[in-house]
Image (tube, rainbow, N blue to C red; front, top):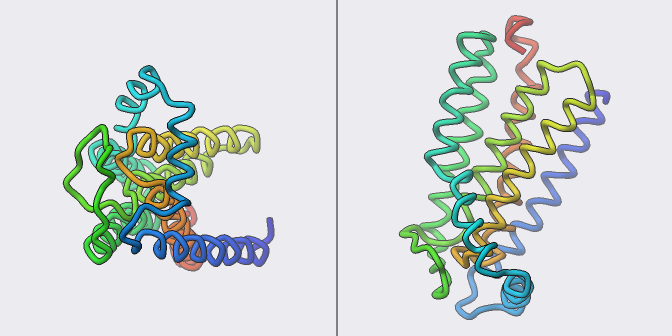
Length: 215
């Protein structure tokens, strides 16, 4: 895909995702349970059972700070020692740590309480979901750097699909467990995509200023 086409796609994704985030933010700021969240909770509950809840309790860890922080640390080491990709290291830190800080700031600013029906108790406020926002940033960046090492388009597609699936499972587990309102998760993914597009823009903008083996 040509450079201008990539930038246009990034702009389109960013604008669309920002619109969705603002919509979800407007829902999160309402004191009562909205029809939107209520309908999606009913949908999730209609397919939920003890087995699915138990599964969600186990897989929700893939979006935790422990797993993402550990994964980002090892990816950072690989980019540093194996690839000498210093720009990639900076973008990874911006993507993961930056999205986490932004998420925490918005949570405190919005101050939305967790659902009372939550299966797992969490201390942080609800909006936006960090399991959605930070995971989409980390897992897509992980796929991006791994895919850069591959020549096969099919292999790249598989890597991206697996990483996106992991992030999706992370976010959906929070709805199944009622740890987040659906709008928290959707808003998290939307803002995460905006932040991700910023990371990709910075990477492509400055890639030419670094050694070839660091791109």
